[in-house]
Amino acid sequence: MSRPETRHVVVLGANSFSGQDFVNLMLDDPECRITGISRSPEKSSLFSRIRQHPSAEERYEFLQIDLNTEIDRLLAFFDEQRPTHIVNFAAQSEVAPSWQHPEHWYQTNCVALARMLNHLRQQSYLERFLQVSSPEIYGTCEGIVREDAPANPSTPYAASKAAADALLDVYTRQYGFPVLKVRATNVYGPRQQLFKIIPRSVVYILGDRRIPLHGGGHAVKSYIHIRDVSRGERDILLRGEIGQTYHLSPDKGVAVRDVVATIAELMERRFEDVTEVVDERPGQDAAYVIDSTRARDAFGWSPEITLSEGLAEVIAWVKEHRDEIEQQPLNYIHRA
Image 1 (spheres, rainbow, N blue to C red):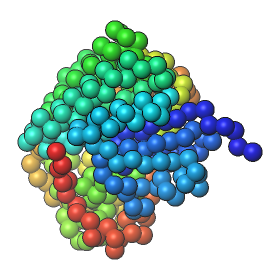
Image 2 (cartoon, helix red, strand yellow; image 1 turned 90 degrees about the vertical axis):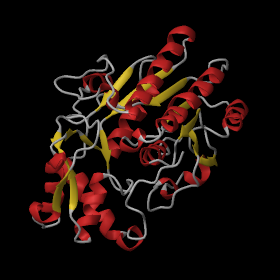
Image 3 (cartoon, helix red, strand yellow; image 1 turned 90 degrees about the horizontal axis):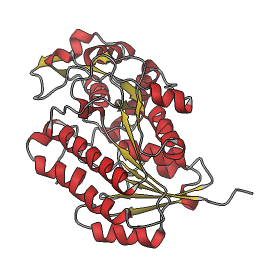
């Protein structure tokens, strides 16, 4: 007999790449009942593994709610259902487009969040609120960047996330609001949005198209598999110290061009034949390398899936679903 549910976890942004994997992992816990909320309809199995979980039908509910236009409906749902845990993946999260309409990034990442926080801090049911932040708030991350490093954002997106984090800190200090924050580096894996560099590289190689490398691909990223990040987020949500921020990152960074070169090698193609150099993006930070000692010491967490293993998973996913993927747009489509 399964144990009774003791936690109601609401996942905002459950349709996102990171949100869907986190929900799938949390469904392994019979003590959790989960409600996923996103502004878009539920994703198909191509981009979400939630409904593939054997417990999804029994312990997962999905609601389509827009944080910006239906915030009253969301707050009423909170008060009716009284969730014990909330995880906030919901955000305008792309970097380059944030230069065109920065007000859209601030509306979702700050204004809607402020309305939600001010309501929740007056209620008694919430035990923990996990905010999915971003290491982009630090700007270029070089050397040893720990959780107390000062914010130095380079883009409107990063500035909006830094502002959100500052607001959360204010509510924790003033009202004891039960905030935890997580900043994970460059997440990847099967079912990721196709405009991201790793799945897009696989699609381009299969279609004999050259992969554009911004600035030659010399920017250093810290790629980490989505399941490793979801495991860390689960640990932080359930076991983290209220008010703390935790980093999730691999042991070292790697240049974008080297990641693409590994993909090409795994697909038995020459790097020079599948790439081309294009101009660098505005505000592109030179490196994202952060220190995750705090999470490793607190939870015994560490990445388990190597980059080569994870890239092979993405290649296999794209090949398996190639016909369906070829019908999908490869570019980011902005929604206000």
